[in-house]
Image (cartoon, rainbow, N blue to C red; front, side):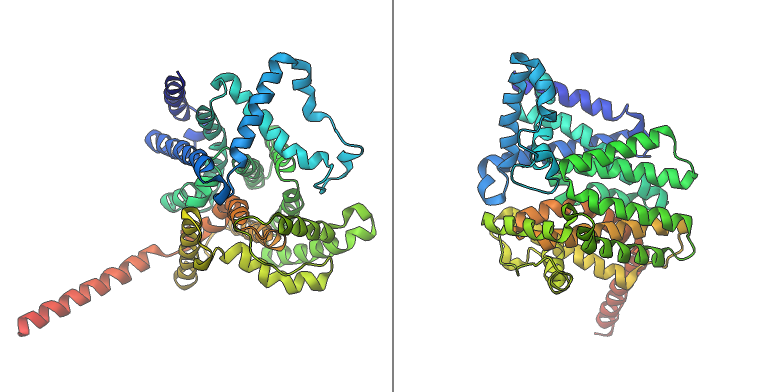
Length: 438
C-alpha cells in the first residue's frame, strides 16, 4: 500500500509541476521541471536513508525525530482537534515569549521545531504517516524557492540559463540539505519569497499587494524557522533598497549601511539590555561547543566585545567558508562536503582570473551586491557561533545559490573553452609535425 501511495503521488506531483504557472514562467521546459522535481525527491529519499543508517555520524537524526513527533501531532488532530489547532501559539514557559534569542525555556527556540512538526503532521493527513511519501509533498513546496531565485537570476543574467540552472538547482550540498525533511528547504523558500518579490517590485518601481503579502510571508517563515537570520536579512534589504534609490555609488551605500549596522549591533544593548546581540552570539557559541558532536572542532573563545569579534573573524571565515578540510573527512558525507567546497573555491579562483567585465544594468549590480553582503554576513555569523562541521555545511547551504550564481554566470566560459582547445590543437600540431619530420 505504501509503495502504491508513493508512486501515485509521485506521478501526480510530477504532472503538477508542469501545470504550475509560477514554474512555467521560469522558461524551463516541462521535462526540465520534472527532472528537477525528481532530483529533489531522490535527494530527499537519500537524506532519509542516511538518517537511518548513518544518522549519528552525519548529524542526521533530527529528520526522523521530526517525523516521529509529527505522527504524534497527527494523532492529536483526531483525539483533541482544539489542542492541535492552538498548541503552536501557546507559551509553555513563564515569559518564554520574551526570550527571542534564548535556547532554554524559550518559546521561540521551540517554535522552529514545533512549526516544522506541524507542517509534517499536515502532510501525514494525506500520506497516512509515511515518511517517504511526505518527501514528495515537501519537494513540491520547497521547489518554489529555487524556481523563484532562478527567475531572478535569469533576469539579472539574460542568456545565462544553464549557468543559473546549475548554480541554483544542482549544487550538491544545497540540493541535499534543501530537499530532505528538515528546515532548510522552508528557510530558503522564505528567503526566496522575499527576494523575488522585492527584486521585481524594485524593478517595476511599484509594490503590489501580492508583493507585500509574499514578502511578509517570507519574512515570517525565516523568523519562525531560524530567527537570528532575520537580524541579518532585514539590514541587507535596507541596504538594497537605499542603493536602488541612490544608485550612482551602490557599493559605497552598502559599505556605509553595513558600518552603521555593525555600530548598532554592538551598541543596541545600551538602549535595551534585551538587544545584546554580541552576547547572543557568544551564548550560541558556548552552546555549540558544549554539544561535543562527532564533527566538532576546537575554536577560540568569543567574548561580547568588538575586539574579540575582530580577532575571531579569520577563524569564522575559515570555519564557514573553507572547511571541511581534507583532514576533517570522517565519512562519505564529509568527503563529499570537502570535495565540493574545494571545487567551488577553485571555480571562484577561475572567476577572479577569467571573470567578465561588469556590463550589467545598475539595478542588476545592486542585486549582486545584496547577494554578496547577505551571504557573507550569514557565513561569518555561522563561523562565529558554530564549531560543528556538519551543522556548518547544512546552515551555509541556503546561501550558496545566492553567492555562487554570480560566480558561475560571471566566468567567461568562452575564453576558457578557447584557451583549452587552442592548447589542444597546438599540441596536436606539434605531434603531427614531429611525426612528419621523423
